[in-house]
Image 1 (cartoon, protein in one colour):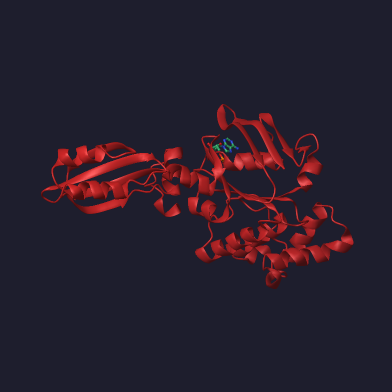
Image 2 (cartoon, rainbow, N blue to C red):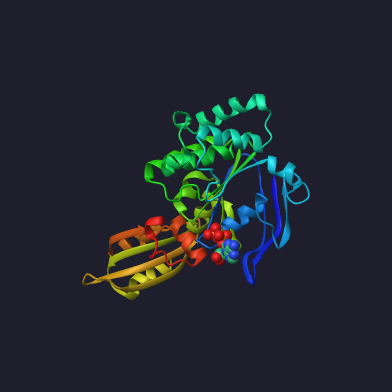
Length: 319
Ligand code: ADP
């Protein structure tokens, strides 16, 4: 459906998109996730034909976006980060105008405007001037213009930025409503946005795709090695020796615990192995009591921070 080959974009000497290649199949919701400045908007602007790449090739449903731009663009609806609204028009006038731009047959325009207004729940504000609408309503008008003509592919650049939690939920519900019937590509620097709405994620950092996988694979991959944190009462060397003797344990580190006479042990095991039961039986056979044992799981958030090298403490609320 969409094929991007060796896409590169330079602004002067600055490499904003660095040799990206990817394929997008129909009917799924894809997420472009990356910190600010990663190259998401640049990629989306190139994908939609708004910006020329420095080099590379993009095919939309088989049409090259530069060789057959009109055919390629009819397959795409786009909501840029700043919606392209004419704020002096009423909602109805603006959507009618977009239908005309998209060369809709005159007799079908009213029906199409009513359809997209109903889908985005803006019918009740159709006679209002866009400038007087709240940000949430404006975003829905932007969304409505993107889905005029029911394009196969809907591209949304940071669609919830600046919205309050209720408005964010409304937009996410609209996106979910499109999945199945449309291919949706959504960009965000907010992990929860992508993990809640998308089935597949491309993580972009410094212009490069650094991960390309389903949301579930991505979190499973990092969780496939078991890591345990154990607090036990006993001799440090004895505890280490017992656990090291257990099958599938790959590494053991032990330090003195906070409570007197205790040991804090970190254990790593082979992929897809659960060594909790063997450890507890082996330690109790030597009359060593376990005060605490917990599995250290890697969240998708950790994966994102690890891959992008973000510290995460400067923008916690966003993640
Ligand atoms: P994102 O959407 O992930 O925040 P952008 O695609 O907007 O990232 O930007 C990628 C990089 O390109 C950033 O370093 C940004 O400063 C730079 N950039 C974006 N647009 C321009 C431009 N018109 N001129 C020069 N540099 C730009």
